[in-house]
Length: 264
Image 1 (cartoon, one colour):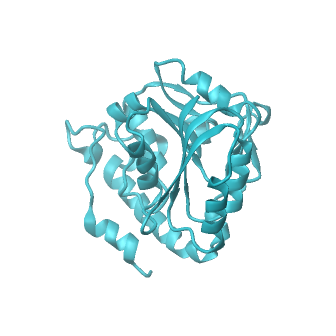
Image 2 (image 1 turned 45 degrees about the vertical axis):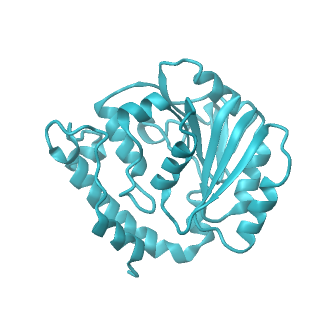
């Protein structure tokens, strides 16, 4: 049984329905982080979790007071089940092909494996739209950096840490999963074929805010890992401060306020 399967949602509850319907392997705790769903979306989410499921033992919906961002949402999944040996974290517009979750569970039975990616993504570095992360990895590499708000680069930041301090990783599973309408699996040579970010597509008014935040997050990546990060050649220490632990980060309050509150 998978101990925790978690997702973060802002909109697009119809994708979440598809995800839940695709679960075909036992899951003890299915956690939904509601990052600001409204109207019909929240009504549909409530309807989904009130229905019994053959494979899901417990549903939990955690409603945030505002959009806390992707990295903070992932951290919330981890912190909500601190006792768990690992967590499976997926985008809300991801659904699973037959046997995918079982294969992910089997990969986690090797206690030396620190992270499992459903798909290798660009350059086979790992795609964070669907991944399993072990407690020992959080211990050694840290939680996700919440300065990356609301989205973009929180995954690249973790890839830098994995590059500096490698761990045993599974990059591709044989079974398929779907991101939107796109299929990821061995049969597709694990090409990152996806319909893209459906959160942004479903709420076009977010486009400008996301674009602005993306620029700011790229600036922060350069500040944290240096000009070589895009070729996976980061500084060996965050912010180029010798001896600073790769888990280290700091909450830049003004930086985060700007992205949370700016009307740009």
